[in-house]
Length: 119
Image (cartoon, rainbow, N blue to C red):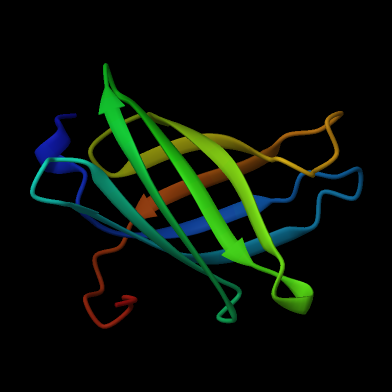
């Protein structure tokens, strides 16, 4: 995969960074800014928006992300995806205040349905 192949919308299946491994689904939108940095936006379970910026090298995509949680608290973390193909990303993630004994997991599949996107 090349950097220019990354932009698009992906369906996400993941599990949280805890002992219960709560599963979730969502949508990930990837784009590039004018400096070729990766811009990410997730919509998790149709309710929670997350945002991030990152970089890509040797089929590895790294994104620093953040989102607003309860009481307007900002949570931050990092996700690392291995690009298995032009259509599949396999990743793991950790939040700053998450359980350090666990990593969250995500698998993303390029979405071919243009009506299923986030702006």
